Image (cartoon, one colour):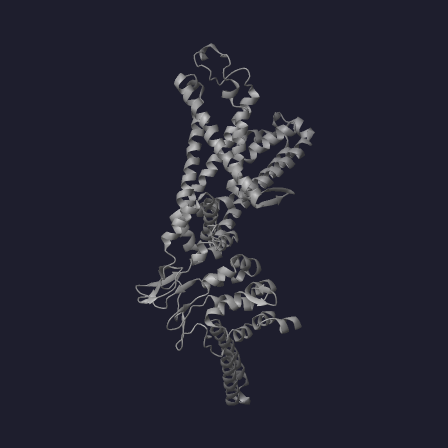
Length: 597
């Protein structure tokens, strides 16, 4: 404490005690042009310290909130506007990440400070200016997307991402830049999927493969599957892995370090598809049978390209079919991300993804029940040998029968025969059916309802988060020159008018919102008269004296009411005292709001 009191500034002392009133008094002497810097960078001894960062790290959240609000308050004299957004992000480029890590409840305080709303409305619309320059452009010119926006997206909070300036910024990036690159990538994936389906699922019919022209078309299609589809994925993942290793973007999962980009579902599916295509090439009949003599006389005349030969065994055929099935599903799942072009489709996609989790959990417990009952039935040797139906002879047969029974693929006539021959076995089977149908599947329905109820209020936020992740990933393919051209088109260096004839600040985009969406009772700009020298401090009101005066008036009124009521009105006095207490509490709240203003 002695070191802080003797060697630090008044601002740092206020942070130590987490006293916003003390901090306000410390800033009374700050020159107008340096007021924000006093709160963002001070020299203490031989070290440079950021008071705002220190307040966040030390848990002085009251003073941290005051500093954020004070720096992002627009003040004006007769000649100039003063606004600390540029200084805030210049001295604290990671301010959003620091707030979300240390004090997440201050996240909206920062966002609200980047918005100006007029206290006047016209035709039920209110002018609003989003100062989103630092929500789009990072302070590091070699980077593109702002660290602040990335932090808010990665924070993964559906309520926060729905803040107006975040939705406006994400929509602007999506419509003007990211949407085009995203669709180009997905169109290429759709093209590869179509070629894959034609080459592996349609043209592979035996009657078509014997036709000379279709045989060559099929060979060309499969060549495109491996050259365009596989080589494209191999190149992309190689680049991402090298970039992750170079930048140290690695994460540890089960003790193994993997590139951080592989923690995202779409990239994992893309890697699985690449591995599936690689596995398909190892059992591709076109490669194994190329140049081999025809196995059947009717295949003569097809040339070097053959799809059936002795070298391509039945086991290879089975593996090839499995890999084809996996490839179809992986391609279709990747294409489903195209739904992100619409918020409505993205909302439905989010619901489906959360529902799949419940389906997998349900199938897991159903599978456990199947194994449990199949083992139990296999132990009933007397009952199993007493029935004529051979579907329950051993563990394998019981497993197969219970799986078909659980998913409705079994004829119930066989169950009726068992009921006549073995009452004990039918009791076990009925218990299994009750557990699966009456409990697990009904529980799955209730889980669906619970998922929808929990997501309904925040479904748009979840959809925005999904789109935000896509924007971040898409920007990896955007060139710096294209980004600079986009930023130049926004013309953020031009000052935006607050009102007609009132030329405001640069770095914002003006828009209109419904007048009742965010009511504003008074002008958000604090205006001062008098001298306009930037080295003079701002004239400040003595908030502490106002608070003391208000408390004194409240005590005076309360004493007067007590005297008027007298001893005979204790009951009424009790009610009146309660009312005064409420009034006092309300007055304190209003005082707090005035302090914030």
